[in-house]
Image (cartoon, rainbow, N blue to C red):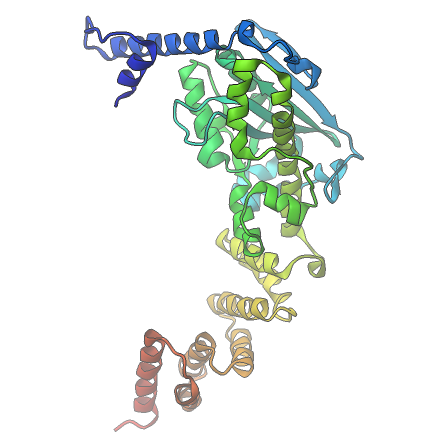
Length: 429
């Protein structure tokens, strides 16, 4: 069913032929139908239909009505002072996140010339997770640093008619910032807001700002030791944040629909707190990840995190920094980390033509595990092509094939092919 047909059903209008088949006429008719739907929803949510024992939103959430030339909405503002804690860190520590490290995490060199106060942290609460024009962002949580303090500002549309004023105010706030920080904003929040700006004929600046989506580096660096990469999971296991009585995210859309019917502020108290915590935790997560990039005390960091970080930094093109991290991991107490670090570091050395250093790593790997196919193959290549010691390469491969039991078909085929070629070089007919 097309959008036009769905709107016709929602408004109850009978289909009418268009006087003109022009694109402008079709858009005008769709806008009129959308306005009728919005008016119906607003009528359903009128205060006259609320319960007598309802409590005003202002009585349970600190905030006030904001009047604009385009209409009104509700806003709540709070400030974490420099000494206030959030998990393992204090607010003043969060304000020291390195922008050079942020640029590495996001792969955006333009961030290096900015400061943390230029960032706008953003998270939305919506009527659903499907996205599209039917999803309504009723609460937009924002945060930014002011010196060593962190300000949160939450914009709330008390009904559907307040979306336009709320979005215009969001655009004004964003115009004073230079980059955006979200958690899964690339896939959800930003696309949704862009759609809502268009529907409300508002100018938006969010999609043009450099964007740091913390989900992607978090998933890449931290997910190896977590059940999932959700923000609440990262809070509990890494940031030291405990949420007492937090509302599950899947309950939030229904809370808003209940609010529209009952106008009871108690329905939204937990929603506002959940959103505020999300915004502050993004600032805390950014600090944790940037500290990891800049770390000089590797013993205080999880070796698995550093291993994953080295891979990310290598992909960003900084082989030297990735190598430095890996060099600190090749003697880790975690055997799996040590093996992976040696493998990755050897390839960095190989690419840089540091053959002797690479060969020492391959020799150590073979001594630790004679059945390590990667190390045997790379060391055999080195003996054959760089050291020109085909006899050593032949002996290595022959011994490997004679003793290795659990080789894959491709590994055995490759090793046998190398063995035949080395035999022909050592004892040509």
